[in-house]
Image 1 (cartoon, rainbow, N blue to C red):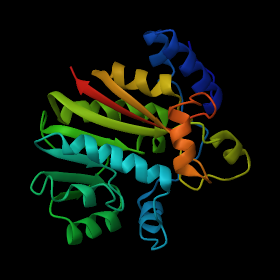
Image 2: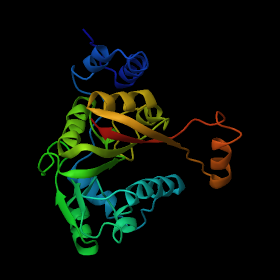
Image 3: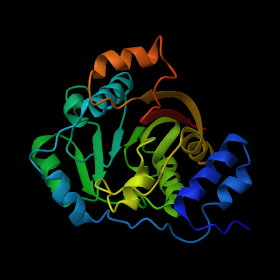
Length: 254
């Protein structure tokens, strides 16, 4: 049986099993104990973080939001955004999906703010228990959400996403990569409340074992300087020069 408790060693093992398509062993790593990383993701934590007037998305976040918006712009029907936060995505969609935007967030501040500013249905709820009927949404987005959950709750969360997504409907998931979380935790830092050190194989396998087929992936890079130039270089003549810092996954419910 799998008994290692260190969360970062566990992620390395998950990555290995995911690459080797050892699904039973991969799943066994989610069944034992709780992560060492302290869970900071309370309602109060997110109320304070989201209500900060100086909080603005960085260049990579803006690119991710626009990329996700472009995907949703090409789809019709009911849309759910899990962990909508400060409405960066909704602001780009309000004229495209004026009557079909739904959102959930654990932050009361986020829900109150959304209700005042965007036409849609916004509820204070957890990804662990989505307050919607089965097979309800055509498209579900969970950007920068799963890394805030302990590992033993991630597959349940993806199961909830599967439940509320229509057959052949699409989901969009993004998570950070290569952010140096272990070093930050060692130094007593975790400003964003992350609980997972994701890799590309891990997130793809989590989505696959939850009943979805991967349709596309997109890696993004975080550059402090010369963002747009380096971003172009990373996708053209220097594809292996930098490690990606984010992945966007589009998948379809089987």
